[in-house]
Amino acid sequence: MRKAFSRLPQHTRFSIYRAMIDCDPAPDPRLELKVAETQEELEDCFRILHDAYVASGFMKPAPSGLRVTMYHALPTTTTLCAKYDGRVVGTMSMIREGVFGFPLQSVFDLSDVRAKQGQVAEISALAVHPDFRKTGGAILFPLMKFMYQYCTEYFDTRHLVIAVNPDKIELYESLLFFERLQETVVDNYDFANGAPAVGATLDLPVAKEIFRRVYGKRKERKNLYNYFVQLRLPHIKLPKRRYFTTNDPVLTPAILDYFFNQRSKVFEELDDRRKALLWSIYDQPEFRAVLPMMSGSLTGFHPMRRHQRFSLRCPAELRVRVEGGERSIVMTVIEISLSGFQAQSKLDIPVGAEGAVRVELGLQDKATLDVRVMRHHHADTGEYYGFRVDEPDEVWRRAVSALETEHVAGDL
Image 1 (tube, rainbow, N blue to C red):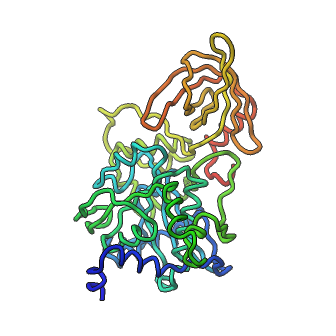
Image 2: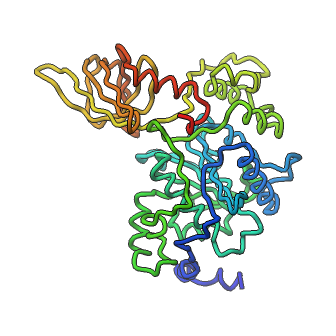
């Protein structure tokens, strides 16, 4: 039957896939979807993932019984979990571009995706417990909805990229309208134990309109537009944030040590450059005892700049003094320190200009600062400006202190 199905025209196969959609708008109340944040939740996720990958031939059995990768050690990676009656039954990881890049960039060219506006995230490590794989999408569809909502509302992500087995790619193309990164199949994808892989991408705002056009008038259980875009599931527990951060780091020193030193050899097997990059992220004293030591010297490496664990998107208004008067400029603050910040602006701001800026760091936290424009940088994604803060106010000091010293976003 599989061979016969593959001989059908593509549009017929896609229509059959769409006819099989069954997304329940009222899932079982015992279902909960959340960010995996405790050691126990993460361990359950990594165990389900390990067993699924071993069964599919995507990895060899690990002594730990867990699939843990270097990307899971980054604050730019978020692991989602589906829990049923308190038990983890499904998981998915979203890897936004960090210091290690993306897993799939080793074999797929992402230059066209990166050239477009918006952040990119790789959807990876998707697995459902065997007990729930034949439930008609009762776990998979809610998990996918959670991913869509988290990416569009919380993760500051516009483009998704995936690397999947060729046998699965048509599901993503037909149901979610992913587009292939290249026509040819990669015969040997190291990140999946040498299995073949197809790379694909999805522009989320574009997908929203496609969902509306294709699914908008279908019955409720087959209407992915209503399911992904309009429906609010009380089962989804979005993380609480005090500040306008766009990621949710959960790794404490103890959790890092447990997964990447004790249960696996991930840290031990990193090269010196990646080890140095980890030190540039986790530069608080509490992390030093659990981070991997360099095996050689860093001769030839450029000095590592500090990489913040929290990314931000804070709306701001700059009133800058220019010749002949004052201008008001709306911009977005994306990185902060006690003495300055980086912002993105669609309007030109003269280097050397001085003024006052009001930054919304959170719903209840608004800082007012006197600033000076110190530098301007042009990138494919827009215009970026570096500002010096003359005298930070108490709101700014408190936010910087929290973001630099706290371990978990939920504590902020």
